[in-house]
Structure formats: structure tokens, C-alpha cells
Image (cartoon, rainbow, N blue to C red; front, side):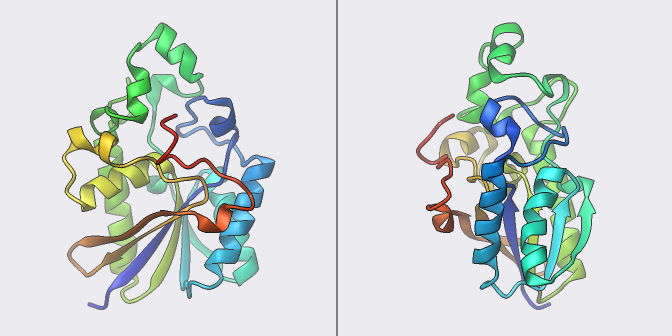
Amino acid sequence: MDNTEILFLRHGESRGNVEKFMAGQIDIPLTEKGLLQAEAAADFLLGQNIDLIYSSDLIRAFETASAFSRKSGIPILASYNELREISVGDYEGLPFSEIVDRYDDCFALYFTSSFGVYSFPNGESTEGAGQRFYRCVEKIALSNPGKRILVATHAAVIRSFWGIINNIPRGELGDSLPFASNASVSRAVYDGTKFSAVSYSENEYLKDVGFIDYSKSRM
């Protein structure tokens, strides 16, 4: 089987990112800045020889993919709910501060050291979401051998997936890998049996638009 390359495009800035609430699987659009980030990512991706586009079915990811689809003329082949962000269950729509005050005073550690082992009440665990995402991406790769594929998706599932393909112990994932930046690109290659990581959170093309560098900002 020919190697298949997957480029994971995190969605641009959304209202959840700005207002610091748990968006999870709420269908919220990009902000004005997020739309600009999507355009900048699209310009960068025009030089990447992409063959196919897939997307999460949540609007913030679909809007980000659509910017590149419009400029390249490549249609979005399918949008899958398996490519959605982690389900945050009872915390959906709640501000970070309210979660800490009312439900979990250690919740801030979800963003850092506890990420790899966190489970949301009546939602998913980060490991479960990563496995769900992995199965969908593998299905896409197996269906398109030798292609270069863009997958527009979300930060937590990319982060969890990266831990899986790099065999990072779940308890160490939060401290060893930050979230990918909004509208950044991460790359992996599938050889028919396994994924190998190539790069994580490429974001140099966003410097004129602005972005949060999560390797320097710990929420």
C-alpha cells in the first residue's frame, strides 16, 4: 500500500476560544479572526498538493475547511461526526470558571497535566475520543491509499490522537504535548498498518493574523 499523508487542520478561532467556555460538540461558528485564520491557512494549503478534503460536521471545522475548498476548487468529500471534538457532557456550554467553582476545582489541569486521563461527566474521556477519532481517520486513509488528505477537525481529538500514534503514556500526555493552535496544520503518514507523526501544529503562516501559541500559553 502506498503511504497516505493526512494533514489535520484545527478550526480557526471560535467564540468558545475567546469567551473561554467548553464548546465541546456545540455547533458554534468562527469569529471574525477565526475566518481570517481560515483564509491564511487556505493560502498556505494551496501549496501542499492536497487531493481530498474531509471535515468534522461541526460548523467551526466545516467553515475552516470551506475556505480552502473555495480557493482550491476541491470539494469537501464528506463531513463526519466521528471527527467532532470531544463530548464534554455536563460541562457543555459552561465557562471554565464556573466548572471550577461548581463542579471540579481541579478542572484547570484538564488543559495541562491531567489532559490524557481526563473524563467528562456524561461525556467522553480524552482517550475514548482519541480512539474514536483514530478509527475514523484510519478508515479515511485506508479508502484513499497514496493520497494527501486534509482533515478539518478539533484540538482535543488531535492532541489525543497524537498521543496514541506516538505511544505517549496517557498520564504523561498533558505535560509533553500542548494543544495545536487554531488553524494550524499537523501531519501524519499512514503506511497501511500504522500512523507516523511528521509535524505538529505548524502555524508560521498565521503570524500576520495572530494566534495563541499553546506551547507557550498554558491556558
